Amino acid sequence: MKIAASFPFKAFVCAFAASFLFVLAPAAAVDLRTTVYTSTDQEYAEIILAEAESKAQLKTVTVFDAEAAKTVGLERRLVAEKGRPKADIFWNSEFLRTHRLFTQGVLAATTTQAPAQPPIPAAFISGHSIGFGIRTRVVAVNTMAVAPAQRPSTLDDLTLPRFKGQVAVSNPLFGATSTHFAALHAQWGAERFTAYLKALKKNDVVILPGNADVRDAVAAGRVWVGLTDSDDAVGAIRRKQALAMIFPDQAGEGAFGLYMTVARIAGRPDTPEIQRLIDYLSSEATEKRLIDMGAVQFSVRPNGPMAPEVGPQRPKIWFMDPARVDASLAPSAALIKEHLL
Image (cartoon, rainbow, N blue to C red; front, side, top):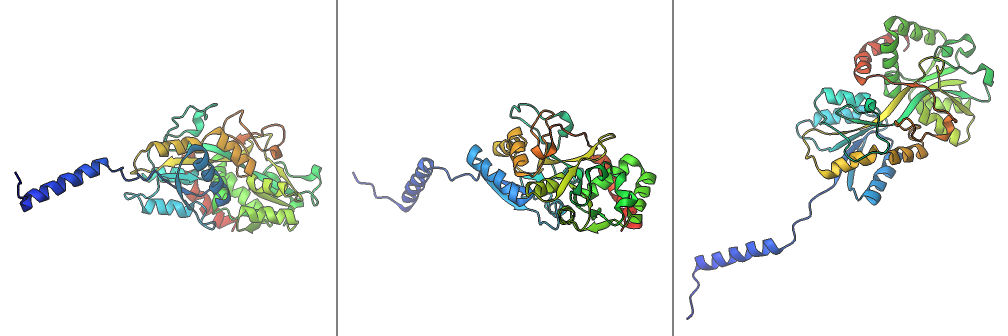
């Protein structure tokens, strides 16, 4: 017996068939890409993230900071996107702006979950970020202009009369130098910090735009001595330029240390891929890769790798709680404007 299919019956059959085919059809591909905002130099970050894709099958989309902004630009962007975040991870070349983002509610709890051998020391795990890959503040010296016996060994030596007009620093209102000077303000107190600024100015210190500019001026002999970052100095040494790297104040507190951080962004799904990338970036293997490339010079792990340019022994390095550095950022900047710039 034939049944004449009415319109409602046809509609039912079509709907049933469509739902059946939907069940059988393969599910649409889920976007497993992790969006990374990073202030790490693009030449280094691109290599590390490409290797994360090839070695750990992690897919990423990366947004880099403009060189001129160096971290500050991404800090502002992440704050602006708060509530409707686009980034999953912030991989920062330093720690201060990471702390500032935490205080503004931009970051989620961040942990290491993969077993790390050896583990990251507790001092570099804040709850909202993971620290890895250390570089330090160093004194760069032109080897043709300054004999070994005359080279500075402390920050105070930069104010000696024999170096008058021959010392360069990058603008201490920006970048790693601003972090360093804020830490000095917190460590020394306002009185000693002010006296140091006045002594630098009296010695006709040369203010340059960035740490790479300081390195280049020293290597070219335009100045004899410069305060810069260890990664900049190592770059010149590897190019066999006339530059030596000194870790200052080894008889005292040591060289000031900065380290990279990785943090999750609040308001984004907590996917396994995000956690895997955090573990990958903070691994000792990644630290070694960054050291080999010259991006950093030390592992945060006490017995971890370090750059051969450092020498046979790990120098004395000091760190400061990011909250203390942040608290000194504004007052140190005010004193810098008044007494140095």
